[in-house]
Structures are given as structure tokens and as C-alpha cells.
Length: 378
Image (cartoon, rainbow, N blue to C red):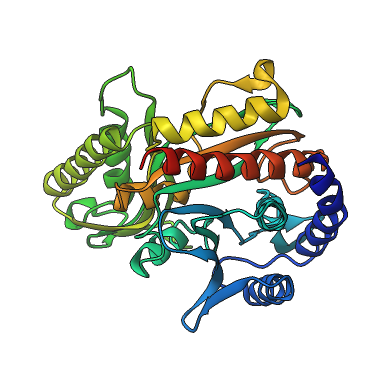
């Protein structure tokens, strides 16, 4: 394994450098898809692309069982040094590199000997819609075990440490509108003041209580009403709400109560309040066997003292839609320590690139041990 990784390292560094310097935002990863396709076909892999979507799937071997590995390929759109641009500040350039390196390593190891390896390069994770689109395409329907990976910030774990599971939370974002009637500033009784309605809604949301043992929050994150005329009471407004919960069941309860709050305020104020969900992320649903197998691979790679417990984070990841929508898929996500700082989504995010070869080794061992586990279970 170590000899193969030494051979892979310069290739991985070159792949990362290209992907890092050619970021593309969600659903626009055209050149990223083309680059990965040409690279992997040049290495002799069978690559599937899609007419209606960016992203690609690499399949190695034939028959059953099927083990999957998923990497996200999109970048964020953010201000960097005063200019808005695509930027890989969430580590997806590293995730792609890890998947490519794992493919090359397993190829040299002759894995899989039986069954199939399916590596998924998924678009639009930052939009929360990429995994759902691949679920609809049936890409994970035949997968027995599915693994993901995400770089972790130094505030969680440092370089040389890893976790066999990341317990992401659930998130849901709403965009809404208040529709009332404008009124003259001297005649407030002739209309509905959308600002006062929003004040009622803010208080109603702040009054929501669910099980305090489960981390959660709901808050208004945007509100716009009125114009330049200070003597007009605005009847209309737009708003957004951000909701977070550590479990999917807690999110269902939180969403039910937010919906009730919106409907109650609308009735009390005599206005129409409409809203829609504009983004949604599922909380982690991990499989114990997948966690155990990845944990064993981490220990084999780094040593037992460098395996840390599952990481609990309020951040979201659309990877978990695969298991939520297809419960037959057993999955977990590698949390890779890499001294990432100042933090995920920071425009100047950086990390220890030596972690790339560490992550490749862990993922390759995880896939190999999963095939062995499935073979023994027959």
C-alpha cells in the first residue's frame, strides 16, 4: 500500500492543483466534469456522464455486491480579496482529489476482485440539491455501502486524526412574503403594517420550544419592507427563515411549529403570509457497520490513538439524502483532520495537503475491508 501511495502522491497533487485553480459553482461544473472524465478515461476507467446534469459516475468491475464512494464537485460563490468569484473554500477540490486517488490506488491493488466499485462525483452539494438529483437517477439504488469524506476544521480535529462518522444536522430555509394593504402614515387603521406583522412573527418563532436535549434553532434571517416614503405604512414585505436541528425528527417537529406560528400570525393580523422551502438538508443517518469498517481503516492507517469519536456538527451535508431516501444504503462519512483554518467557507481557507495521501489510504482501506466484509457475509 505505501509503495502505491508514493506513486499516487504526485498525481494527486497535480489533480488537486488543477481543481483548486479551476472552481465552478453549483450546476455549472462543466469544465470540472470534462476534466475528471478525460483524466479517468485516460486511466482506463469506464465513465458515465449525463446530458441533463453535470457530474459523473465511475464504475469498476461487475456483478454484486456494490460499494460506493461519493465526492462533491462544486465550489462556493463568495467575495475573495474584494471580488466575487467561485472559490473552493469548502474543500470539494480535496474531496475530488481523494476520490481520484482512491480509484487509482484500488486499481493498482486489483480491487474489486468481485462485485463493483462505484465512485460518484456529485454536483451541487452547496445547493442541497445534487444528491437528490442523483437519487432520482437511481445512481445509488444498487449500492450496498456508500462512503463520503469531508475535511474538518482545526477547531474540531488536527492533522493526523480522523473520525469514522460526521453527524451533520438538518437544515431548512424558507422564503416568504406578507401581503397586506399599504396605508397613509396618519391612517394606520386603513391597512396592515407588515413591519408590525413581522415583529409578531419574530416573537412567535422565538417562543417555539421543542426537546432542549436536541440542538435546534429557528430564526428570521432576512426582512424587507417599505420604500423611500416615510409617510407610507407598508402592507407588503418579504422575509426568510433559517431552521436547524440535529436530527431529522427534531426538524419535522420544528418545521411543524414554525408553520403553525406563520399561520397563527397571519390570522391574527388579517394578512396573507405565504412561504416556500428554498433549500433543505437532511441530518446524518449513519450505519454502525459502515462506521466500524471505516474506523478499522483509520486505525490501520493512523493508529488507534488517532481515531476520534463521531463528530457532531450543526453544519449540513446533502450526502445524507442518499440514506434518507434509500434506507437500504449503509453509509458513513470520513471526517479527515488536516489543520484546516481559519474555517470552512472562509475565503482564505487552507489546509495541510499532506492529508490528501492520508485520506486516500483510509478510503482505499475502507473500500477493501468493506468488500471483504460483504464476501464473508455470504
